[in-house]
Amino acid sequence: MGGPARTVKKSKPRLFVTGGSGFLAINWACAVRDSWDVILATHRHDVALVGVTAVAVELGDARSLGKELERINPDLIVHTAGLTDVDRCEADPAAAHAANAILARVVAQAAGNRSVRLVHISTDHLFSGDRALVSETEPVHPLNEYARSKWLAEQRVLDACPDALVVRTNFFGWGHATRRSFSDWLLYNLRAGQTISAFDDVYFTPVLADQVVTWIHELVSRDASGVYNVCGDERLSKYEFALRLVAEFGLPAGLIRRASVKDAIGPVALDVSLLSLVGVVVAYLIARSLF
Ligand SMILES: NC(=O)c1ccc[n+]([C@@H]2O[C@H](COP(=O)([O-])OP(=O)(O)OC[C@H]3O[C@@H](n4cnc5c(N)ncnc54)[C@H](OP(=O)(O)O)[C@@H]3O)[C@@H](O)[C@H]2O)c1
Image (cartoon, rainbow, N blue to C red; front, side):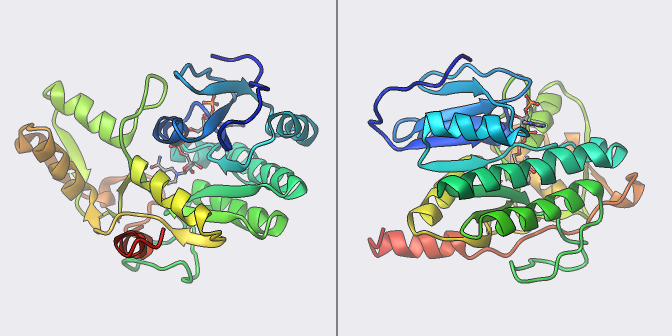
């Protein structure tokens, strides 16, 4: 879509999402575009989505970001942009630092300067993986460059914008042409009849991207700030996750082969499962009609 953001009078609250061509941002826009005026801030890849505006923004340049925010006047900023390829982060720590820690600080300062609510998307990768189901208060122990840059990002965000909501998560769902998700990759290969190796000794608590968006908006509506785990309520190995996927899509389970992380290269956390009460609390509040 590209071009300047709309300057029409607001009929809906306005949401500015960085990393606009990314997996989460596109899922976010599709999930809320009926109730929010969504502006996706893009970088190298353009986006064309019905009912959503895309605008190229130089996030690293505080002055131009400030001008864009002045013009767009968002009610909520969601920062999803970053370098998410763990291998690239490992190969180029400076790029990881720039895209994850520095951009997050610039966006947080811009949000703080304008007193706009900020949601910063962090990760479950912050832990060494020696414990299951870690809560938000556990000390972090990032093992690789991606995790270190994301941990630094959290600190920079909360320094610059203490009311920010920092969300640690790990999601799945449908990706798109330029960005396939882990589940897309699995389905694509399985449908092509390829055998997939999945770790049975690496654990996580995956959650559908749409569900992440719903819970975050509920947290925002309740003025939540600080660090929250927003994740699924089941701790699964990557192998178990792959088996669930083949069952759901009627594909042969024989295509999934058990593998061990011991055969992987580079520092990998064995267990990044998060403990979250968000889903439980939200379900309770909805049931009691407290929202
Ligand atoms: N995917 C997961 O399961 C997962 C799990 C835990 C946490 N997270 C976190 O969730 C967030 C969103 O993840 P995702 O999977 O949606 O990411 P993604 O698909 O890899 O998208 C990243 C976005 O960031 C943009 N970007 C990268 N470098 C940039 C730069 N220097 N300046 C401006 N924009 C830049 C990219 O734009 P271009 O492609 O145009 O450069 C892209 O739109 C990330 O912060 C990630 O750390 C993701």
